[in-house]
Length: 402
Image (tube, rainbow, N blue to C red; front, side, top):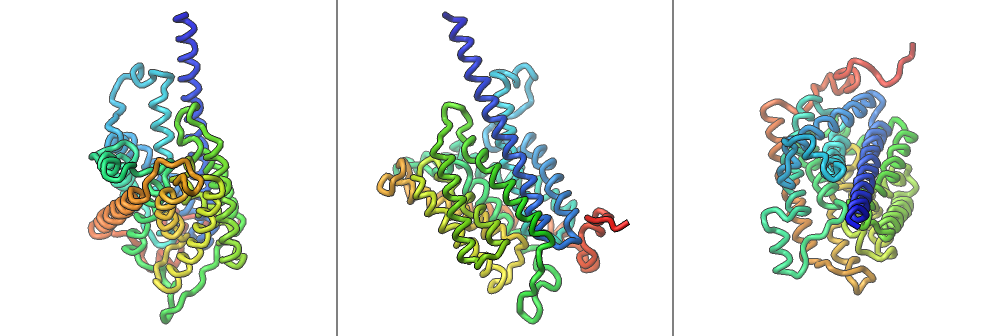
């Protein structure tokens, strides 16, 4: 009997390890999506830089999160024997891998906002600081109950802050960090002339579309496998993710007047927004969240570029920052039983938690990127920016004509 129980436990643990490993691999693949989305959006002279940034940001993020960030968020470290770390089929190690791919999304998000005029090494330093300190600080508050914040919300408003897959924790934080970096970096040379926007056409719509599709596919691992164990898997999360994606696409198509850039970012807006409440909402509620997010992204992107003159190249603040904040709030609306959700959520707690995430990210971004700007410098010289980051930094272009 004991042998049978032991065998069952081993099977359950190994299945959970495999489940979260597959999720980690799917989210890892999303970083290719970040890369190609940026490659397709920037001008041709900056394509190589986009690819190299995403790859090296991931490497720096891995080390920063392994040695510092994971300890800040979860009070766990890896300074133990391999025998200890490999207990339970190495589940805790694979859980770190999964959460690290989330953390590495932070500099990948920021990269799209600061494209075409940022220095290489200073931005890698900033990536390490944001992933090692700023992001895990709020991650631990939201997902590990650090500093008693969740307990206070539960005691005060009946429920804690709910963010199942990171609308605020990952995307919101990444987007508002990016806003700080973009503001400190300034606009690209020639982007505005006599107060009017000058259009910089994307270098490759096919690459932009490829990036969007890779991200969309990987998002089902991002959301569904946030359950982290096989017995927690829910088809509701999968279908809600799908419906929000569809809603974001259709809203961006109509409001964005069939612009291919808006069409391929629309599904991402819906996916960002649904993360928080994807385990609570009714599919029709998820559709509504996606529709609102798609429209919100198009409107915010146009306002950012045209009226506010914030040169956010890929629109990462509207996409991740604003739609991420909307997702945190939406979980407190469409997750309610009165609107067909499963309940167990408080709108006031969602508002407070979202506001805290935005505040931590914006303040952290101003400190990190402001410090780097003051002591090292963030921006390429005017000549280097004119020549393009590919030749100025990497000494090679994206295409050879030999």
